[in-house]
Image (cartoon, rainbow, N blue to C red):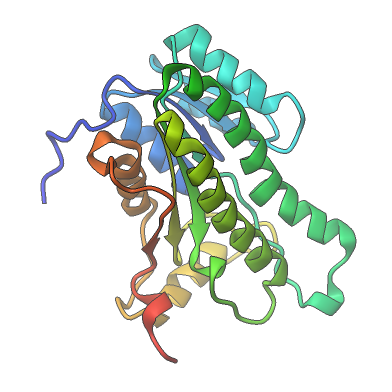
Amino acid sequence: MSTANINEVEGKSVIVTGAASGIGRAIVELFHARGASVIAEDIDPAVNELARKGVIPVVADVTQDGTAEHAVTLAIEHFGKLDVLVNNAGRIVYKNLVDMSRDDWNWQMETNVTGAFLHSREAMKAMMKQRSGAIVNIASYASYFAFPGIAAYTASKGALAQLTRTQALEAIEHGIRVNAIGVGDVVTNLLNHFRADGREFLAEHGKSAPIGRAAAPEEIAEIAAFLASDRASFIVGSIVMADGGMSVQIS
């Protein structure tokens, strides 16, 4: 299907966290190509590679006080408003529960949940003034399902799903829609901090889904663009599953 003429986010002002690589980078590039102006935020200085007209990179930690406020201020100062927030920043601890330290647990929860909370809170304050906006959280099939070794990750993604639902109820009266994407295996650098073959592992693990493969980041970016757009005007508080059927199979 050709998407050359789709411009559902044209003219929108957007913040994307975790923008340096993978799903976040794909979202920045797709949104910008379709006419959005983007604040691209990441703790990795590689985010500076995205700098161009209409894309302002910010090197920052989503978990730190002041980061979300700064991103929202930049969007309003440079683009005049804030229409969309994509909470994509995420990481994973891959340890059995008995082997996990409190620092491991906090490291996981701070990015996947606290960072999303802080950015959602500040974005919603700005969006309430204009009585419009959309927030898209990058959740996971791990919001509902699990396998050994990812207890902290499933807890964080489950919390993100519930944050999505609750904020959606609080936000919709102000014209703000909040939704999430329940992603499956996507070929990204998510696992690279603890295994050199992280991308290959995700590609191989994706073969266990009914579709028989992992996703490319660009496929998730398409869903984010839809949920951020007025085309998704009746979708509120949903976790839109994009996992190749992983969550509906009996194994």
